[in-house]
Length: 337
Image (cartoon, rainbow, N blue to C red; front, side):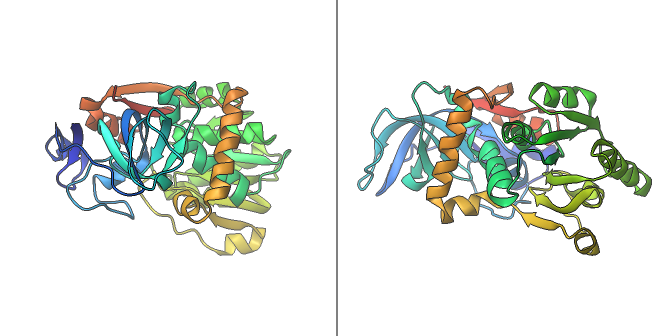
């Protein structure tokens, strides 16, 4: 089969050499494993970090990037009881998805309705799964509260915008261009504003905080959803409401922030970590319930994954670069078949 193979960890300038589209051996399912004929995969920011050796979990070298995909079950190993050949599924393995076929433990596979578009399914799990867990289980977002979403036009950001709207919150979308803000407004955000791209200085941070306070009547946001990190985190915490919840989603800015913890004391607010992948392993029943809720929201038209940028499997290295260069709005999809 064909696959994208990462043969060396390197920065983007070397990806033409270190990310190779080559022929590899077909995988064979073992006990409790499922062989999936992949139809589509999605690109996520951990893919960008992993091929550079910057992610907190690294697979053995060489490896096939790609954390999630969707396809059709081709064969099941012994011990698999809940899946049959021909089932439509999505899969979350952390890596291995930029390939024509994939073997995964059955615990990593989720059956989906056959009428669901497989490209939509490929882009649903990580972004919407993360965002629903963050807003529901971690933040306990309530109707009428204000939700501020940073990096709001990205994959997880846009998912948070839609889910926050469906939960009855007032959603403020913050993004780096007016075009991106407009996309968020189209997906349900109540307000939006443009922030500076790149690191902010102190004056720019104050302006950022003041804009949030202005849009919230001086109260601040009840919940802040932050997949950006870097110089954006401290001013976002400063603009968090009394007893608010600041959600640590990721660090797309490239820098892990070190906010002064006296801010949490002064606002009696919570700084809440969101590690969806670990939670899915520890609480599979609750995760399954979340996915069933997402399927219902999708069927009702309350969420609508934005798929604008598509790449063929042979161009999946370009798809990773596209996300790394902050060119994406919504999900980036790799078409496999």
